[in-house]
Amino acid sequence: MRETPSDLPSKILYDLESRHFVSDKKSLASAIDLTATKYRTRKQFMTDFTALHMMVVTLRCNHKCEYCQVSSEDDDAVRFDMKEDTARKIVDCIFLSPSPHIKIEFQGGEPLLNWDAIVATVIYAEELNQSVKKNLSFVICSNLTALTEEHLVFIKEHNIDLSTSLDGSKCLHDKYRLTRNDTSSYDAYIDNLSMARTALGNDKIGALMTATGDSLGLFPEIIDEYIERGFDGMFFRSLNPYGDASANKKELDYPMAEFVSAYKDGLDYIIQKNKDGVYFVEFFATLLLKRILTPFSTGFVDLQSPAGAGISGVIYDYNGDVYPADEGRMLARMGNERFKMGNVITTSYKSIFHGDVLKELVSKSCVECMPRCTSCAYRAYCGSDPIRNYLETGDVVGKRPRSPFCERQLAIFDFLFEKLRRADTDEMDVFWSWITKRSLEGIKNEEATRAAEQAV
Image (tube, rainbow, N blue to C red; front, side, top):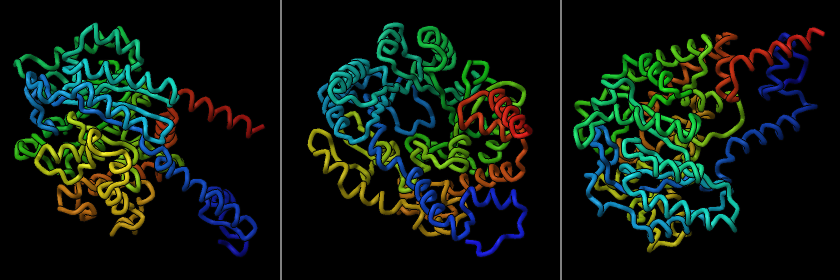
């Protein structure tokens, strides 16, 4: 709080006051109220408990990816399919959530291999929602290679989104995304992507990539592949140390510093693409920038405090077991059920979501009171990953800042804040176009209009 008029230039002073870094006595109460409102807005995700519900309808998969996080089963291992009565029990549990927004995401394995369970879930959920009236949506996470026109008719009728995986060019995609029948995963993916786009449109299909050591130096080429295939954004994702990715660690792993270096090169390449007139988003940077430049919360579990595991999202295994996050299920597949919250067939909703597992995760994942996080300059924009902490250290709190999570976060925050400090007009326009989901031209036109009005 400033006692007397400051010697700072008035524009800087007004900027600091508008962002509540400084205040005079007269406006102090108002500044505190506004800051509290921003803080409540940042924590809004806790009031929408729990919105994302992931269902593993099968562990079967027609692929045997070398970095598969869940160690999928052969495509004929039907004993790992979710039964329809289990699916209905899960939907009953989902609709007990107080959240007005419910997203059901079908995962695997390859979920399309248990199509009957998807159909039964969607129809039953829609029937329940006729009386509950929640904002209900569905996503299928698929490699697309088992997709048929019959599937697309149902997907379109029920307004279901598709989330897919594309690692880059044919050479990169086929090297680690191996099919069980030894055919090209990339060729089948591209053919079915085209079929899906024709039926659903471009905006109903998104894609993720997984970075391997072979792809780290090729991010610009991977970006070009995404643009050529009609995607308007991507998420640079490093390997997770679960399942087959852990078993094949010697072959697949790389230092986090190398991933961060590739990330920086990729982000700069994407920014330049936008400057050249190609609207294309890097989603992780957008999440971070939204947290830095706005008071709004994001749905990304790893950027929440307390961690969003179990609060923002939860996952149901094929047999009805419940875990706070996919990482908990992956750990269970590796033989450790440390984070199992219960089972929808034998455990009540209250016991699942008010049990010891979730209470521990909440109490030990608040960055505001975690060792070292409390003094971190980026604390307000970051989060924690308690399950990965446990995997790496045997403790949900973990050891920061030496963890790979912190190494990645700190380096990317440094990179973004250097760009914000430099405040290049063109880069800032690109960032705001990503945050607001508007074209770069629209952002520039708005600024030109505002400048003209101020001149008058």
